[in-house]
Amino acid sequence: MSYRGFRLDGLSGAVYTYISGNIAGRELHGGCSERKRNDLMIYMDNAATTIHKPEEVKAAVMAAFDTMGNAGRGASAPALNASRAIYDVREKLSRLFRAGDPKRISFTANSTESLNIVLKGLFSKGDHVITTVLEHNSVLRPLYECRDRGAELTILGCDEKGAISYEEMETAVRENTKAVICTHASNLTGNMIDLERVGAMAKKHGLLFVVDASQTAGVYPIDVEKMQIDVLCFTGHKSLLGPQGTGGMYVREGVYIRPLLSGGSGIDTYNEKHPAEMPTALEAGTLNGHGIAGLGAAISWIEKTGMDQIRQKELFLMRRFYDGVSRIPGVVVYGDFETEKRAPVVALNILDYDSSEVSDELCTEYGIVTRPGAHCAPLMHRALGTVEQGAVRFSFSFYNTEEEVDLAINAVRELARE
Amino acid sequence: MRDKELRLIVTFHTTADAMAMEKACREHGIPGRLIPVPRAISAGCGLAWCAPLTERRKLLEVMEEQGIGAEGLHECMVRV
Image (cartoon, rainbow over all chains, first blue to last red; front, side, top):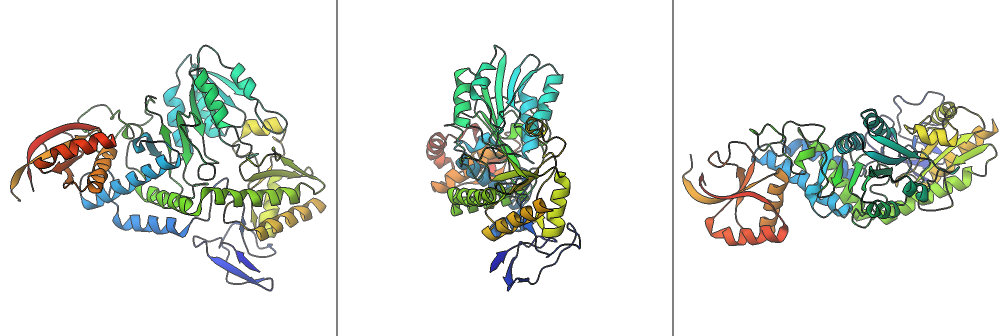
């Protein structure tokens, strides 16, 4: 049986082979304990970050180390190499999100930075903002800060499966409502929000529509025009398969965001104010050119492989896992699995076991990497009644296999029996 | 130092605009290159597109077609 796996020390993402059940040529350094039954790592924490990147991504980062100067800082060959490479990735992202003008894409270090810039830069005292309990702390905490400074906040609840009510969202609109902000998919349940529907509602009431695409960019098509999205925040290191430290945002023309940072821009040096033109307006300081080069290679890989194919495989693996574990007595799975339109995530609990203990057992005994606890999604856990227990989240990528899924199902079955 | 000649110099609001300009000119076969903005034009810093004077019409056409916004269009003595 052939098998794809990773070295835990590693950066290699190498392919290993099972021969008659034996696993050869792998080393483990750190992470899981010596009690492991085998030393293969099965990585199922892709909603936190994808560990296996296309080879092209690594090659692009390494090449950038040899060629890139500081983008926008002069007309030397290395500086221009960086400027060109970064502009090329702006173009790729604007194509990916159907954003039109590449200059409407600003780079940041991750979704959290994008969301902080956007939320703190958009809302002032007296503004009302609508959001949902599905949100990650990267949305909630900046919004709480806005609330402390005088903004008003409505957080929509959900049903027992973690789905929001679109009618309730529209009912929440007030005279001073400025924006709706929501995630495209819950990082805990995988439930998705219908962006086209929310976008139409926002447009109808003259509201700004801000989207956190952390869990879906690269896997689900996002069309900012069709979905009437005004601001889209994304990270590069999850389903976009790029390096950590890359991310950004799309900002529709005409939407003004007060910059969180000001400083070096490479242009207009003697102006006391940071340039107001996008993308520079929201990019102070040296960009992560090396990482952005890797992100560009990742987007090319996604385009070449096909987003539909990537998504279909991930959803197939998710469905196979869900079908396997949901039948096991003592296992509770969270989220709505009646639809295929969801992020490839399965969060579960086994009996009344602490999710941290289950996740640790999966890692130490089976080499299966999952994420226990609260997942930076406090309101979603509160809504599901899992604050005490947490949940064990399995999240899949294109690089997972059916064999890995079956091993994970068996592991859950064994733990539920103990 | 190389001799100075009169050239068409296009300045931009952002580096991204300069990149868009270079790409568009390459695609349309318009000669020129990116240079640091000459001091005579701006006391700041940044990139400018430097092209032969004869390319003015073509440059303006491409900029309009591609939606590239320029900060200014100048004729300036630069070293070539």
